[in-house]
Amino acid sequence: MYRYMMMALLGLTGCVLSVAAADGLDGWSLVRTVDTDRLDPALKGKHVPTLEKHFTFADGVLRGRIGLGKEFFEAKRVDTLAGVGTIWATHQDWPKDLADFEATWDFQWVMPTKNFADCPFMLVGCRLNADGEGYSLGLHGYTAPLLIQRIDKERTRPIGRGRYAGYIQPGWLHFRLRAAGPIIKAKVWKAGTPEPERWTSEAYDDWSGTPGDRYRQGALAVGFSGVKVFDTASHEFRNIKVRALSADEVKNEASFGAKDGPNYQGDVGGTEKLTDKQRDEFHKSLQALDARTVETWKRDPNLTVEASADGVVLRSTNGAPAFGWLPEAKRHTFAVLQAKASAGARPLLALRAAGSDTADFIYLDPVWREGLPAVLQGNAQHTGDIVRAEWKPDTWYHLLTHRGHLQLWRITEPSGQDVAAFRYTGGAGYGKLEALGIGVAGKGAVTVKGFGAK
Image (cartoon, rainbow, N blue to C red):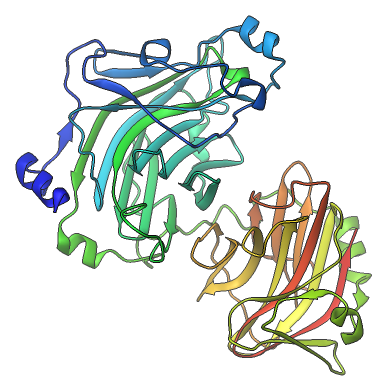
């Protein structure tokens, strides 16, 4: 009810609210956050952000800076890429109960003595509650330029990624963020260029089992992640506008629409590549699995295992993801699974940190939706990394993960040609010990012919 009262009082539907033009910080305030991106443990409780420490507002531009200085970081022995976490500001004129809305703004990242934006670390929060839980949209460094994340007190989870190759250059960028129920979309494009029809990033985050209003509505905030190496950088926002979506707009919003959904073409073949030697080694020397070996692993209750002439046959008793977990070991550099699936099933490759529960893992699903493989965070409610690719039933493929400069996940043909490739997904496998999982989902059968890890 409060949301609709606000819309009536402020005239939100079909209209736009923006920041007042007066200079100074009147009307601005800091927003509490539990998003501890890049927070160094040595700084916990040592730095108390204030609005005046980090923000100025003049000539229609909100400027944010970490601004703590070399002496501060050296005294705390902070790592180069660590910092003081997320710092956000909001304006009193912005609605506090945004649910289904669209927001637009301009952003630029200014690094003294440099003429390019190397790692901007822009962060915009939305649907934030009083505890700082909600969502964020981040422009993060070259590995994942436009990242959608879900924030709660326990952790921050990536739920959607996209890439905009043109952002590493000086000047203003335009952003558009749309939230319609569990569908969250974002796009970025260079100022002075046409707005792209397709969204840069998209996420589908099913919070239907979450009690109350969490993730359904909340406040808007803009800011940055304070990182030591960019202590003198300036994060600049202007032309911040927000409007509520009408009921018809929400109803008509499509998830990963064919016309305007992200195509993620830059992901396939755009990752760090395996050398020919590495491809040959792992595609030709996979060890055959047998059912007796899999039987000794920790197995999810819904996994069944049997032997066949081609390898080990896996089935899920209820269609939900079901895994057999290898014994915990020191982190592997490579893991490759050779498998095929009957119609209606798909093989899965997972990774979880030692000692974590079954919900705290990441896995590669080649058919999250038709034509959309994904690396998922614990379950299919959070989209994670997504690309477009074609998966054929009863066809042998390799599912692979390996760590180079980044952690990479990919699906390849037996020849080694990429079918789908993903760059880095966090959330598991950071510990010295971790477990790999071989799994199945859907109503059919998955046959695993070979597996290798080292």
